[in-house]
Structure formats: structure tokens, C-alpha cells
Length: 146
Image (cartoon, rainbow, N blue to C red; front, side):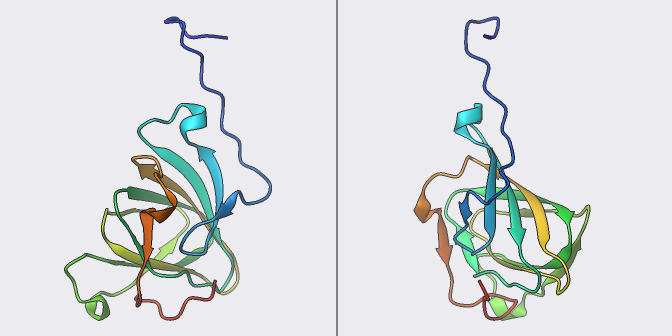
């Protein structure tokens, strides 16, 4: 099947039963939309972090992320590049919440003790390369467990 301008219609993305990989922060990633589905300006993944887990704190060189919480609850710490990390408080997140991780901001997140945290993560531009995320020494949620 082709579009009216003779370009092929991009295929649908589909959630895999098992993770497609591990993010630099240690969370599980399931790819939903990227270049294979025609995503040239953005990408979409499902992120899962197991109950009671805490990610590694990181920042992104060029991408901005938008998150939408699908299941569970947890905490997220977001820190502007010019702020003193220890002065930035974490916030609770839960089903239905949405937030932005701006380019260059340090961040770390955790899942509540009883249920995995699962959210959609829309990235603009699409995730570029493996060195996009930079692990930082300290986050606002303590030591990573992944």
C-alpha cells in the first residue's frame, strides 16, 4: 500500500512483550515509534521501572522528553543545568501525570514500593546515539538500584 504521493505508508509500531533494551538510566525500554515507523522528528518508547527501584541520574545532550504516566507511582527529580542539585526537591508522580525533561536538565526517577512505574516517553528529536545520555555523579533521589 502506498500514499497518494507514491511514498510508502510507514508501518505501525507495536509494543513487544519483552524489553527492547535498557536506557542509560537503567530503566527498561520498549520501542514504539522511531525511524522505522516514519518518525523523523520524534520517537516514542514505553519506559518501565520495577517496584522500589531508583534510576541512575543522567542528563541529555540534545533531546527533550515528554512523559505520560500509564501505571504506578513514584518520584522524579529534575534539576536545571545551573542549579545546585541538593537544593532542588523531587516531586511525586502518578497515573495520568505528564511532565517535561528539558534538554540539559539532570534527572532521576524512582518507582513506588508496591508496583512498577510505567510511562510513555516522547523524545524530540528522535533518540540520536548511545552517548546522548550522560550519567551524573549525584541525583536528588539517592543511590541508584538498577
